[in-house]
Image 1 (tube, rainbow, N blue to C red):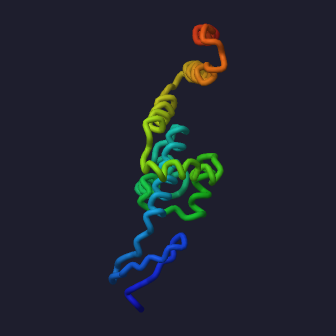
Image 2 (image 1 turned 180 degrees about the horizontal axis):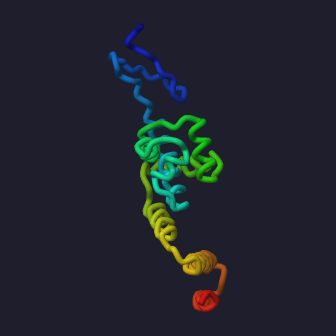
Image 3 (image 1 turned 90 degrees about the vertical axis):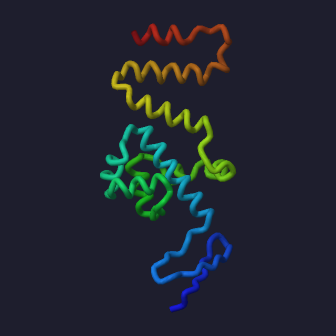
Length: 162
């Protein structure tokens, strides 16, 4: 067997020297896609309030494997991605949304970090009425631009939940 192998990745041929135990290196594009999908898995897991251990059990892998998926260190097979999508209750395409935008920046922007922190903190709220009030407040703030600036929505929403 030859110790030189040609890999065809996205119409760009890449030649990689293979040692006795070395594995072919994925293209930089593949690494970016793996990291993006892993980040989306992590986002959704946090939104649902699941730990990495819980997700790992639900998809039938070890905690370490789930961690590597989220970091983009290990590639996810199509079948495994389907299983993850089922467990996280999203279509497979959801994992690839925003990939073009992230490709330009390479990492999470402050808004993405804030959304993750908001989802994480929301999941930690045990009181259902508090969760509902926060959700209503977020909805009101999101639609604040369509409402006249002098409308006093927040106190009204909070008084209804007391």
